[in-house]
Image (cartoon, rainbow, N blue to C red; front, side, top):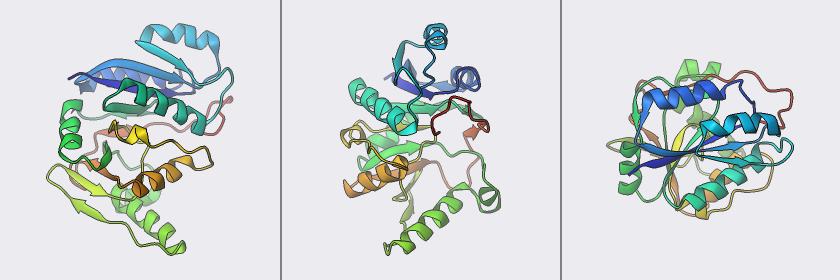
Length: 228
């Protein structure tokens, strides 16, 4: 099985070339590459077309994260199978075989996604670790809303949880695309809530504390950015 990759981009050549180079160098098991472009720059899209099997334009002008993710979600649904999502400002540190991630999704049908663990980015993540920092943040938000805290369970090949959806590089289940991406502010958090309400859970590949497969390299926002 060759798994399609959908790459989300809005900053022209600031990060995308290194993301694609890293994908080709470190990742196996993928087939078609679909680029979802929110740069609003027709000239850039024309130059970029040679790097993708398919180019999808979000809008004529930069539309922002929520609308871009709604477009990516439509593309994922149309592809009709598990889809690997990659935002442009991530690179790979270790080899990844997408078929290994697909095996986890097949074995655990309640998973909406199986995400790759990334290197720490925020100061709290450097102190606690990425997964521990995420758990603390989500638990604090849930206590404020009077909701129960997150559940985390180590499975043989992944950490299963209900903390929510992540935009980190991940393989997304085709069943998750049946849940509509919300049209609101902080739509990634809202999408996680929708998926939990629909009975889904989420997974981090490997064990907590494993060497991270990916690194977030983004730090600059393009002048034309509309909210990433």
